[in-house]
Length: 85
Image (cartoon, rainbow, N blue to C red):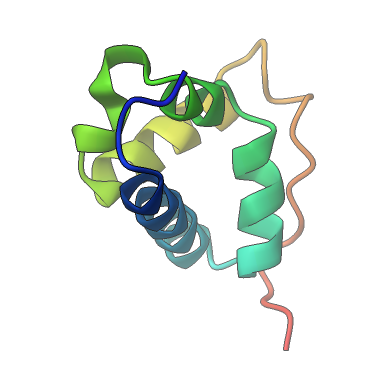
């Protein structure tokens, strides 16, 4: 259950997605797909460990770690590094 203001969480989600897309050089749409498949999204949405209080950059790095984890890497559909127009 989200306990933080919905507007704050929406802004946080956008920031993490934007940061991840920038780091990976992928489109925002592709980053959004990866993010919504992640445990990180579930943790932020459910208010676990006050993840929304962490920086966008930190959370983007956490998402990268989750995507690269051996048991999870096959789960994510990550496109090539080219950006969509």
